[in-house]
Length: 103
Image 1 (cartoon, rainbow, N blue to C red):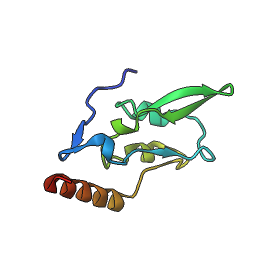
Image 2 (cartoon, helix red, strand yellow):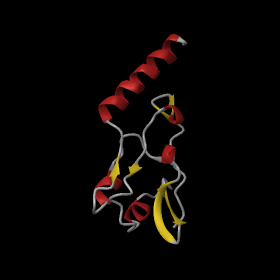
Image 3 (cartoon, rainbow, N blue to C red):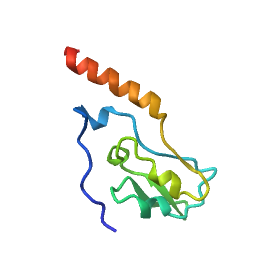
């Protein structure tokens, strides 16, 4: 399936690549089912072959919509996590303040 190209370049005026929001896969839990790849239409995930085994990888973390965690719910073994929403909000707040003051 082709990834949709509706990724955010900015989030509330902050360049998306400055916001540390994206999924992390715990490969000790991951069963390589590919549900995350199927779920996310923004191309965050891809299937790669490593050592003869197909695994899901986070290929484009900046394509992840800030604060979206839908793929976590799709993972049957809880192998996907995202950063703390509270900490991310604080980072965004600091970035916006710096942008407003011209730092």
